[in-house]
Image 1 (tube, helix red, strand yellow):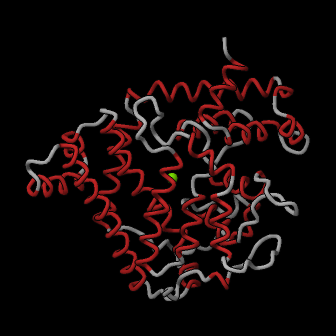
Image 2 (image 1 turned 180 degrees about the vertical axis):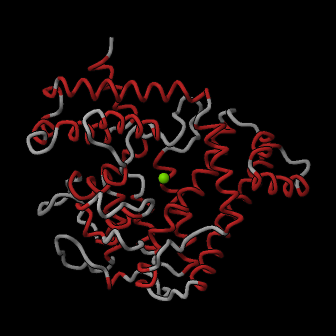
Image 3 (image 1 turned 90 degrees about the horizontal axis):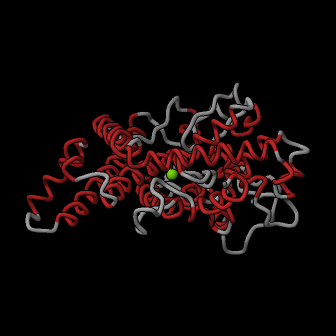
Length: 371
Ligand code: MG
């Protein structure tokens, strides 16, 4: 069933702390289960994806987004003959390092760290969560995930330069990640582009006409749908259109990745790792449409005046709380105070804030920075 270039669980480079095999779950299935049972995973439910619950209860949060990415990734993995257990574990863990308040929170936390000559990166933070912060086992810290899952956390969306990250040397940064990890970033984007159109319409921040005028792939599908279902309610026409957009993106990614593998003469996992570029990719035409789609969302949704207030809140709350704990480290919980003996205080504060849910950080803000 698995393609020759798929990751095989029996060839895994294993865990940091060797463990006896499980009687009926393989190592990637166990990693998937460890992620699902992690506290940081449960907190995704109360972290903003794009919209807070201010507008509606139907919006994606980081947990439902994560489930959507897992679903899309599994479909693509099956079509490409990839290891779907590894893909599922990688999809479920891909956003575990995100701070509260979505991308605004990530930016604000990074800005607060830069005041102290440091930075925040959600992939690196995710690695800290699974390696250190999750405490579930008596004999080691962290989740003791397999090499392939930790490597995928670091490499799924980003190429870190080996010279800038000597601490990541074990993840062979000069090699491409397996296809199982490469497809996560693309499935992530398919999930949030389509979901954000849906949620943006539901929030009345976008109109169908505006989307059709700005997103070519949507416009084409919308034309087909209107010809087929001219008397259907507008919302159903919209849903039908979104479904077609979704299928086109997923279908193109599968077909084009197969095509690229064939063209590149790639047969083994080692070929994938040694290839000069990532092989999971959309076709040139769909890649252009994807970019236009993303630009549209940036211009009309993410940077829309309607979301400005929430972004400013995120910056203010994270900035002020960070500064408060820098001044008054005794207000941090005891386990974080203890950590600041071994690590710089800004890093400890950053770790604490990054783990918070939206409601919890609001509560902390009231407590320490409220009027
Ligand atoms: Mg994501």
